[in-house]
Image (cartoon, rainbow, N blue to C red; front, side, top):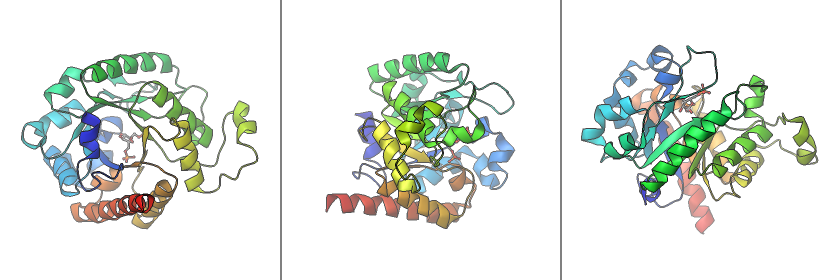
Length: 287
Ligand code: FBP
């Protein structure tokens, strides 16, 4: 029921597509790296208002961010509680559980979300933490989201976005019971030696084809998969990527830095264009 409230909110309501504003970069990367470009974004209220004004499906963030405005604004935009977090001061690839299902219920959230780092030395403990969180969330009627971010262990930096590794991470997230899975855009690289044969003989040059493969890995497209925006980039380039995501059958975008590091008006223009692509893609499917 709570998943439906995400899918029925904002300008993409009823299309099966989602656009989410994630704001945990202050925790993950640090406040100045996240907000110095647009200091208005230091204010929680600004971030809520951005999600509301852009008529997004949801705002995702840690408990302190959501708690800062939820009493006044939770009714205006669905909330996803990011319940684990990491900071860039640490060396190890791990996340602390920083919020509970009870927090999510008290804040009136529609979903709870966790990051996993497939490949990291502590991956199995992370999977177990997430399993507990998802089980409790489901028992309380909340949707569950996983940020599936391979990293650490034997993975080189460029392996984190390799096609086979992104697809593998999306599949693990689906198997852990996530309703919504967030991944980065996959590159053409195939990182796992053992997977080379399985990927041979197909042309993975187009992003659309790679997105379609990630969807296949997420229970043949039966799980909602959204693709992250990444660091600040040119609007035209981002919209091109979104067109490829839509053609590949992806369910939407989760765009943080590219939203709040732009001015309010620039962010609205970008998000408007992205929503137009997803809205139009859905109409083509229905026609
Ligand atoms: P962006 O749109 O800013 O890339 O946000 C997506 C996100 O998943 C955030 O939720 C998170 O803070 C960040 O990326 C983590 O990025 P990384 O772990 O690659 O530094």
